[in-house]
Image (cartoon, rainbow, N blue to C red):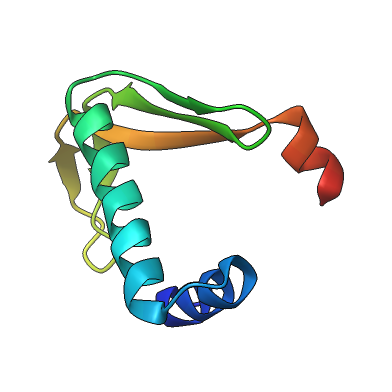
Length: 89
């Protein structure tokens, strides 16, 4: 499902315009990004938890040359589905 398809589905289910659904979805995504940037967690009961995880620096290989390269440490977004959501799959 693409973002456009999701916006259409939200507008139909909620009985609102696509413009309003797009604004709501954009506000949700921006709020999640700001929360994660601060290093906090976002828990949606019955859906799941968004969090930030630290990935350590490590060594890797360039697949085309086989040369060893250094991969820097970084923070990554993580999502863990709730039991309720997992049960619906």
